[in-house]
Amino acid sequence: MKVIVTGGAGFIGSHVVGELLEKKHEVYVIDDFSSGKLENISEYLPFINVICCDITSCEYRKIAKRICPDYVIHLAAQASVAVSQKDPFLDVKTNLLGLVNILESCRELSCKKIVFAASGGTIYGDVPEDNLPITEDLPLKACSFYGLTKMTSVHYLELYKKHFGLDYCALALGNVYGPKQDPYGESGVVAIFTNKFINNEECRINGDGSVTRDYVYCKDIARAFVMALEKGHGIINLGTGVETSVTQVYEMIKIASGRTAPLRHVAPLPGEVKRVALSNSKAKLELGWEPQFDFNNGIKLTYEAEEKRGI
Image (tube, rainbow, N blue to C red; front, side, top):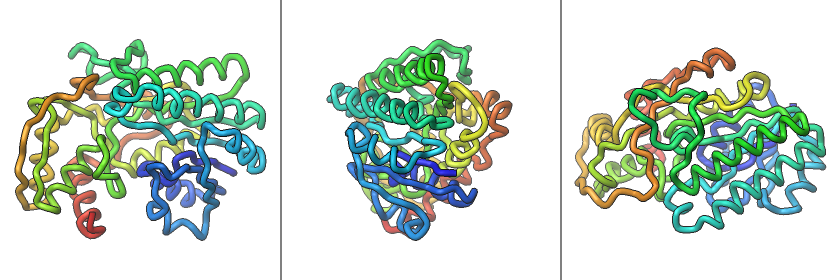
C-alpha cells in the first residue's frame, strides 16, 4: 500500500519509515527538513521516495495528488511546548493549517485513513491524581498553546470523519525517546541528558525535578503507527502507565552510562503539565499493542546507540 509519512525524516518518523518498510509498504516521505534530517533515513534511501515540501503549501496537495496514497501518517509538527508559548502563530500555522491542508487532500483523494500523532502529555492537561493513568474518556483540556493545537487537531479529525467519512486514528503519545532524537532542541530530556553525559556537560532540570512523564521507546511507537493503519479509531493512548520523574531519568542515565554529569536546577517551564501516565488499555484492545521495551532497557539501548553515533 502507498503510505505518505509527513515528517518522515524526523526522529519518530524515521523509525516509522523503517517499520513500514519491514511490512513491505510503498513509502513516501514528505518533510521540509526544518528539523528533520536526511541522515535519519539514509539507510532507507534506496527503498523510499523522499520529497522536500512544506505541509502548509499548495505544493503538498499537488504532490499528494500525484502519489494518491492509501494512507497518510501525519507526524510533521511544531513539537515544542516552549516554542508554542513564545510563538503561538507558528504553532497554529504548522499544526492546524498544515493539518487541514492534509485533511483536504485526503478527502479529495478518497484516502482510506489518516493516522495522526497527538500528544498524550498535553491534550489532557493536569489531571487529578486519582485519574492517573489517563484514559481516553477524560475531557481534553490543554494548558499550553502546543497542547491546544494538538487538542483542536483531534476535533478537526473527528469532524472530518463525521462530515466526510475520512477514517482516522489519533495516537496520543507518551514521551517518546530513543536513538536519533535531537539532543539540541527544547524537548526530549532523555536525548538531552544522554548527550550531556557523553560529553561530560552540565544537566539542567527545570523546577525541582518532580515533573513526571510516561516514557515510551521509539520502536514501540513506530510499531503502533503501522498497526493503526488498519486497526483502531479515535484517540488511542500510547503509554506504559508508569510515571517517571525527570530526576529519575537523570539517575537512570547515570547508571546506564557509568558516568557522572554536573546537575543544576533552573526555573520551571511555563505551561508544563506536572504529571503524566497513560493507560494503554484501549491500545491493547483495538490495536493489539503494548510496549515491549521497559524504560531501563530502553535507556541502555539509547545510550549505547548515541555513544556509538557520537552525538
